[in-house]
Length: 357
Image (cartoon, rainbow, N blue to C red; front, side):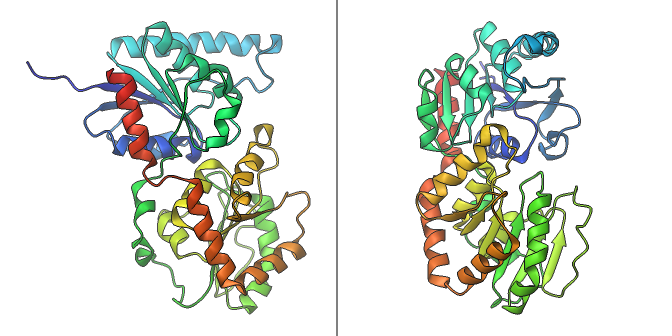
């Protein structure tokens, strides 16, 4: 009798922070038949590798919590649960893996109603509302930072760190960076995650002339929503909305200026890139600050609140760090202690243990 492969549904939607860890997990489960569950018109329609069938449902979040004002959303949620339940049943899936967010709710409820196991991965140091609510329903909640476990007292938590795509683990990948940057020039990389960061972009453009004078090159990934993206022109300035070879870029960088989404931070840490972190001030429950605090606690990053940060402060802090290569080197080394480079393997092993037991 031929063994039929284990069928796994991955529910991950929205931002790179939700999608990339799930994609990294897939790479470590080659023996599984995997399908994807996402939302129409979100990033998953572009990022999910073509070998995984992408199923989509319409779902939205309870931005104001689970109150009476959410009754209309609740009606939609019930419809989504029924859709996912039908997909799981007809597709003969043996389990669900989710990275949280809005899509996790219907996925967890549908799977548990069919008696199927669920593994949830929570990348943030402060777990989101969905994880805190549904965590106890799951067979296991894998956490990206070990501090997250204290916010999930009723869930079965296990520290796996957050998986990164395999190219981020390749120490030689910096050699593949195809950008006109001299080998000896200090490189500052500025990025705001998959959503960009217009306020940070503006500060950087104000500071850039002084950094150019100090000999630095800047690769500035502005995202797609910055109307002034191309307003600065300079031979030492490379401005792009996004860049595919982030692994090479971060390994080559002497310093990164970034938001503090969990996915971006994990990539920085695995690459050993020192950073200045400016948490997105409107992130749910200010969770990006909790993420950044994990890094400042081990002296791997500097943290500035956007509301307090002036161009003058940013300008001088960057110049100070560029003149302190030993401090930058130590920050980069420190960052490596807050992540596990074999996270994807650990998470894949957890999935196998839960689904195949």
